[in-house]
Image (cartoon, rainbow, N blue to C red; front, side, top):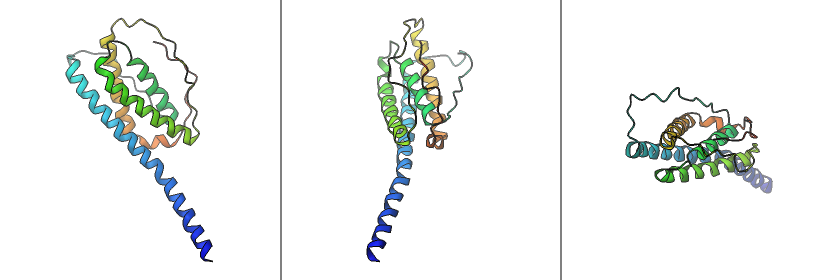
Length: 168
């Protein structure tokens, strides 16, 4: 009787730990995203003196459809932010790499499909690299802000087109 009671207690403890783990990971992801947003704002203020009257066209509104789509889109933005001159973006790139590794571990633990770790197709046609970096920083900031408000979407995989190649 006593051994079955201990066994039930151990099973309950294991279930409780496994249920709380995603919450801890989600909170870690939220903190990483918020830290990156803060750094992006600082970089924009210090390195990009863009007039508020400049219209860069319509904002892209990439939906957050699940863990796989978040990983795919952040990987896309990471590649776009590697266009020189990107010295002032190094910390954001490191933050984004850390966030992607955390999302990758979370995706693997949930059995979500991820893109193949292939080298993306690459065009060396960055006619306006400073403007390009600014626009992708803006997109990253908006996407991370949206991610912070939709953390519940990380509980599902929602398979995006993981075979898509990034061309730029």
